[in-house]
View (cartoon, helix red, strand yellow):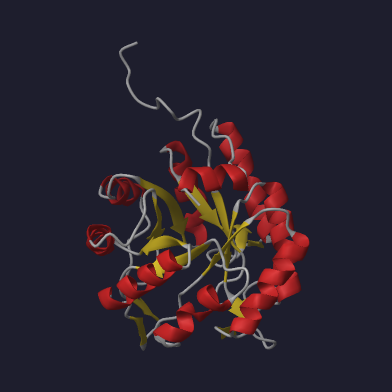
Length: 284
């Protein structure tokens, strides 16, 4: 056969991450967005049943505002353990411009059990008119070192291709273990514009031994995550990134978004990875 390509496409399992809550909009954007520990855990149980293998976790206080309180993350972790079977827990270290670098990593190091994964934002990003999350090289080295010592796998969040050199720096400093788990992000304020051509260019420049997923905001979530599936990549969905199921129709739950993703994966012949298979793929 003359055509070459897709040699492992039909065997490569699709990892579905779900970001249920986020740290910005809340129930004012969609009343179905879970904010409290029990809400989050029950939603995640349905997401796991639908095919999600990684849970990306932000915490909210009793009023629904973002928090880095370790006790709050512990409550979410405990509720997940009560309601979910085996989903991989991934804590955010986001929140630059609001919390100190020590506050941002504390839940990763001080909860019991620790999460299996945690994010590292590889460079600066603007939010609104006055806030910039700086995410310095020094901070990223510190986070990667601390996560390695704690046996937590970094999820490398790349908001634009300028963050790829920062990833290469961490590799060169021997602070990351392959395979590298990368989240390529599209549609944020001063991040990579959400366009199909940009997905290809972004992914083509990732270091070897990278496994990658696409995160796209709002209306871009469905087309660009579908594109990622056909490219052999992985996907992140959920109401942190998109509160709508379709134009004018709010999502009923995060599980509804995961179920649609799994249906599309079946149509494009990408089997969905279980949490155990995701651990094997990512070396957890």
